[in-house]
Length: 281
Image (cartoon, rainbow, N blue to C red; front, side, top):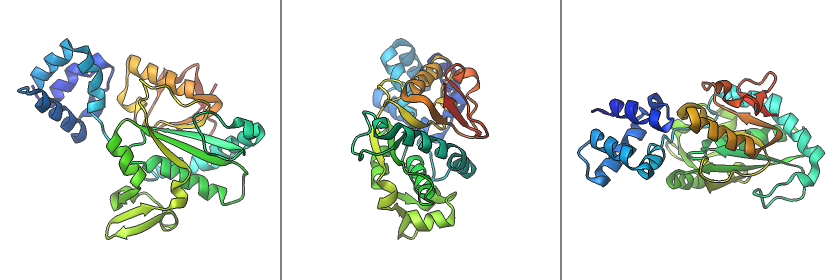
């Protein structure tokens, strides 16, 4: 049995999209576990997974794909800035200081847009949101602050995110003006995120399906996680968690190549003229 055969057998049992786990990082995670258990190969590990429900539940977290980059799908960030953030900022201003919710501490009593970046990997996405918000804020178009909670289950990714040092490959979609403003070069091909861009972002270890979500988020970024890797009941449970975390009227942003299909029906509706963004009903 090769790796693809292994995925074809086990992923449907766990409501996972097997084609998305063909990446090298996911295969390394499976191979590492096979070595830990002293097994001869994929077929033997498949037998263990079928017999041991706890081992099967842990498998998705062993097949982590931690690929991200700054300003991924740059046009979607422009749409977010032009068509979604102004609405969220206005609604935060109307809510006033009372809009500050538990789980987002440390802010002054002011209008606050609360964002949650789910599956934040090495921090590229939440830092991008911070840069987009601060660039938009600098235009003097609103009086609200932003607080970004970034979560992931991988402690190594979270540590890298807190360090905020990146290779040039992670910056290949960053506009030159944004790179000059929000990054400091610290080596021939290494860059550090400025303190100003880091300040609105906090990192927590959190499991989307197992841990309680933060409450009353105005904006949730869930890109290339639930709507890429999850199918069936697993996706349904993820959507329910996202809906529980979103305030009525809040925004959910997914990846440009993701199609939630009918999984958002009754909970979210498309945001007008903002592809890839949905509004909580």
